Length: 282
Image (spheres, rainbow, N blue to C red):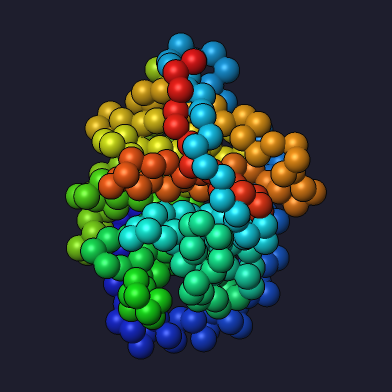
């Protein structure tokens, strides 16, 4: 990623209009992407031989979650959840009531854009999109789009460490951006010892570590933001019990952290439940 460009509001609106006409072409290209299910299955490296600590979980609370939400990004702020959902023509930015799962506020992205990761920076929501290589910045209160920015890779997950925005693109690389000008500051490779960990997806910054969903697995990697080394693994297998499984319920994806009350929330694509969990050492 060589550069990132800001757009004023009128150019953002222009892009959205143009994007409506480009939707059909993008939908065709999705079948050729490395984000496709079969190609990623062959790349996924679960921590089968890792000697690092593996953490289990204890369910503290279980909350309703919209089973039609293809969850891509999740954050917690001010007692509510903010969620980015994907799918062509159905991608949204949402404000969600934790206790009920009710959608309190929603913005539907133009059909051209497939929603991905989400983070909050100084009163602004920053949402990535997948293949369009375009991100959007919104006013947190109104959901009004303020401006957009370009990046040169696919957009998957995004979080921040109070200094940098941290972005994933489905590879084993994490990218650190300046929140002021959205320029690349540095990048790091993620390893478990000397094994690269690919398919880094949804991200959350938790107590000095980067938590990353590993796409198409039940694992979350706990990553050092300084070195890129995996510090441990969280195994969330069977979190969504058999009674909650549906034909559409998909992969684990969605991590949110409440730093005021030290609460960790996780969910998945099309999951009917969202869970508050505590980690347990295994």
